[in-house]
Image 1 (cartoon, rainbow, N blue to C red):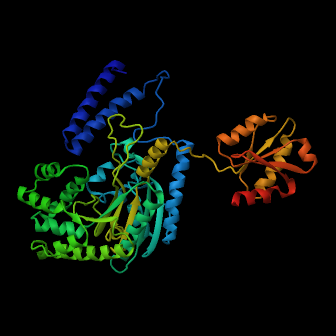
Image 2: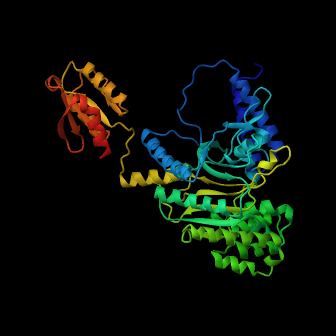
Image 3: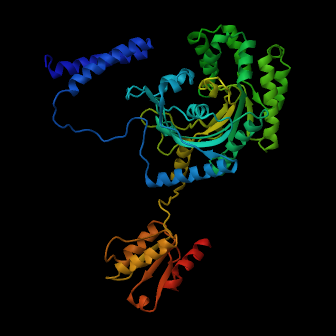
Length: 511
């Protein structure tokens, strides 16, 4: 090589610093991409060199994590409850590829499009990891000419976001979606989606919550009434969406200094977005002189009035709030939008790590109506109206994990119902025969993989792993055709005939 390794490493360091400065200064994407390409070329020179094995730190990639058996049992329990509610409302399950053609995802997420993970060219196809489950659903409906579907989908999605692990925000995470596609009368499916959110939060018992409701037409009508140019609606909407994390003064500053909005228009927006309430607020806004002049605002407010009525019929009046600050930044929403937040957000037991915020979880569910998304993929622009909700399961997991640690809850990591224990040496083949019979009867059972395990060690294993029942036997019991069936928690034992063992265990488990 013409350059030595030290010179290349120094050049890599300088080039990396330049790229960081350009990103901090928010230079154009073209300029940043150009300098990143130079950085990669320099790194390629190093990687081409023959090198000796180097020590490295074992870690998961930034924004990802491993899950222990205890955490997986907790997660599966949460998902089982959610799926049961989805099925109760008629949901059918589908799955889609973890990556899509990049053109499928491009232009669907507004400012968040920069968070999409792009993949290298694979056989002439430019691909990206899916950002959510909604756009793949729209592609699925259009591709298969489906005009009516009530589906749920639980799968991993990927976002090149700045992770905050203690708040349940990752770069790889599960989304848990329920969507109703089809042409129906106004607000009937929308209200059911709000009800589903409420049922799930009640079933998971993670604390008091409020479901905030708003409508994109109300927002657009409000922007029009306040004098916001039409071409700035989406960018101003994105700014308003930050009000749950930032004070109004900061959002106002962003609107004026970064988005180029007139101060008078920003102040007018501020008068609206700081209001929340219920049907009384809807009536107040319907009589607002400025909003009455904007057809979109009136139509959105009439829709909100109907939605609040249906939600009240579902018994949700004390769990919902019509909130004018709710905007949700994704471009594809066209009607009702909603977001569920915990009223009291518990701190994690670990606190903040690596500069991440602690004590706030943010929204635990969100969604809305998107009537135009499917049409973007249809050659004839045929629309399939849709409304859906996404449950923030990762944030829910974070809350429940912290709660369980605080309360000292010990989670079982398997579903074993009975343990087959031998009292002395030379009985491993007898254990295998009993196990085989239990498995044939659908009973979850296990034993020691040692030929001659100590009885005390076997019984301790049962107690430590919260296995409810144990079968204990020696030669003397087998000669009589019986075994001892032991209730692990109480240590009570009872003789049971071997040929009646499976039936007796099932009876005990039912009770």
